[in-house]
Length: 221
Length: 238
Image (cartoon, rainbow over all chains, first blue to last red; front, side, top):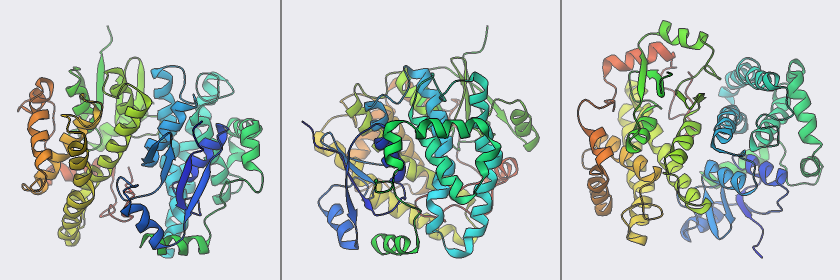
């Protein structure tokens, strides 16, 4: 029987968080090996585990996968979260990529130089309220179904709900103007696997705080 | 009868170029509607087909597909360029994602602040020669096959050729030190569909010049010099 996937990253959200969410939503147990020092990263680089000398890296099914998108694509396909055919997958990809465009701004935000944060936060709030949330609300309204694509859970729903939680931290109350998004968040949050992941003590990571940012700087400098 | 496949973009490479390459390599004919002004772009936005008010957008198989990766994955899968199983797909994804990091740097280079151009160019070439090209040289050396994945042409090969040619435009000798990539370049260029695309008169776009940079900036309202800000993440506003 194959071992559990092993995630290699620092102990924070960064680019690994969407991967944690997707594995958790799929009900997949995983282990984490946290980089704590530059030496930890150097070791991974020196033993050839990192194709582009970068993390995230996930050991899964005998492969050492790098590149966030590659990892997410593999997991989504393996656990049937990509729709039933190519066209559904295209829609799912279109939605997931949009979520990512906003999510990466949020995930990077704690690690930005302080003098740039204010402008970035303003952009994030503006994009969420005026570009992305209206787009997804419109999708849900257009078909009236419980999930974004094909009337069943896909990676698009998981990544969107993750985004909604993260956005709530940046802009409390933002979701109040989007009733269908709010309903989707509730629905997905009540799925047993997601519910478990939302409990304290799960492998979900909190907002990258100053200590975490400092640690990441040391590792990646 | 509806048109088969229509690309909407400005008259330049940008993020649409990888899509043009992939369609061409697959031997798929496509039409282009290229806007030249901010007004034309806004008309497209008002048309309501752009999910995030962004391009690229490709009309294909009854869908208005936006988001470069969504479009590329659909085209790659539809035309058999995405591997034959999940593992091959994972390798292709890793390779194309790595190439995207490099090609983004090259793509945004013309938008550098003038005083940072030299520094940015040096950074790009250093990355190409020390982080990226060695990976692909090694991949070809390790399995000794003609293609990157699964011993047949895939999206990864098409993308690699595209990026090699872009890098050579930055520095003609960038592939010295990479003999297998040099062979690869010749070999993939000779594939009939790709060879056709490399001929003058094809839908392949030239690199940005002074004029087209100005046009792109007007259309997309780029912030000046914001590209190598985050090292690994390109933050471009459009």
